[in-house]
Image (cartoon, rainbow, N blue to C red):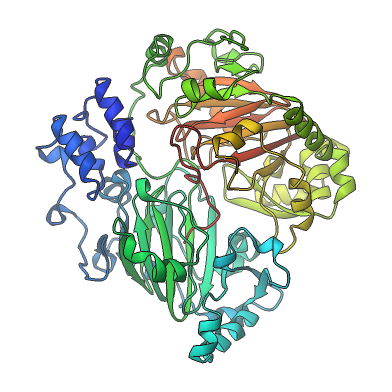
Length: 634
């Protein structure tokens, strides 16, 4: 936990852990103490750990460039590490990359690495010739982020041919015309990979991305001079640039923030005040590695830019360690919490005012999947004060809405989101369904998704043949908030009927900054082990089983492409009782609080399951929204 807090720049948490007796010299998987994980600009935290005794030897410092196995590529226009990937004949070794960058949460520019990915050069001209007008790409206006649905007359998608014409017209503009329209639109599309797989025939990902999970998204972007992304942050991403130049401004996790201004506006009006940021220029052929939580804004330079981002939402690359046997025991966590122990301990006590006793800790493996057992605190009448004092930033809890207005809002949305009600309101509504443990997605209508996937007994399964041919069980598809660019009006109408729980709104100063995500799934679907920032998940229909582990405990036995059902069948039964995760089942009306950084997995138990996830700006304990996916990965 100390290493994680140090890398995230959570100075107050580090101070609390040290006061509780944490040892700053405890080695990570590569023999380094907590000090090695501290950002070099965080002098306050470095001083704190040095005074705690973790300062002096080589195991507590970041290896100097001279000791790195990677050839450096120093430059005056990049204030982060630069590696000359062109000098690595055998390519990048994943274990060495993890040791020197990923496990230290250290961004790096890999000069020339993206050239290895591309079999043929990319340019907007070439892409426009290759992809006909039948392929549409999502269009972004950075200065209208989150507001586009309320602005009329603004295109939300374009063809590559039309975008090429748009870029040409921008280039031909006079200075006065550009000044009147300073923030050009640019292509940013998270779904072009499944829609247009042929686009990737001239690109191959290298072996060093062979990490123990599939990417959550492969995103395509294209822009022109002056376009660029607003300040934001998300989970781990590799950003490859095929043409043009990108100017990045980077912020360590403790300084990251989310802004609605365009990259151009931020650079012109606020960059000089951002003394805690670092700049880096990325050129065509380079690959930029951004660890989980690093804030960034960017500005495109040149007539055109084109590139991709490979983003990971689950089991982030950061803090990956050499394989080892589990060395933690749940029992001390339970005992610690019983006496008011460590912040990331697992709860042992339950009950209290308005609550009830949680079921005893479950030992036998064959009972862990039993939906009647619960080892997580359940507080049906949880108050804001109790939440902030006992749970915020510390441990999961399940609670319910309070008060007639809150309960009435929940009942209204439950009625609107019933299976039959959705099919009546918009059977032609389009969505993008995914398989959680694989990079598989499918564009479908709502009626096809519900009848053929969620409830296959209601109609002949038209996907069966395609499933067998593809070698993928599409009954594992689920939906969570992904809709088609420019075709979200009916989804927006549905979500306008949802009111976040009153306590969640109060925790965030009366406003939830990110729109909640509505999801639908069938029986036995679920999400494998992953983590993200703080959030609240409300079950509307069906049941959902949850498993949790604290941030300092990597889920054992997780392998690439593994479904949650496989983990439950193959790994969980072999774990000693003290090393098993805590678990509980949430039903309709239950709200599950997920603290920042806690690992969790889920399994849907109903025939028709509907739920809403709200990622918040704060969890009442300083936890920050967005450590999962903000929707933009440049």
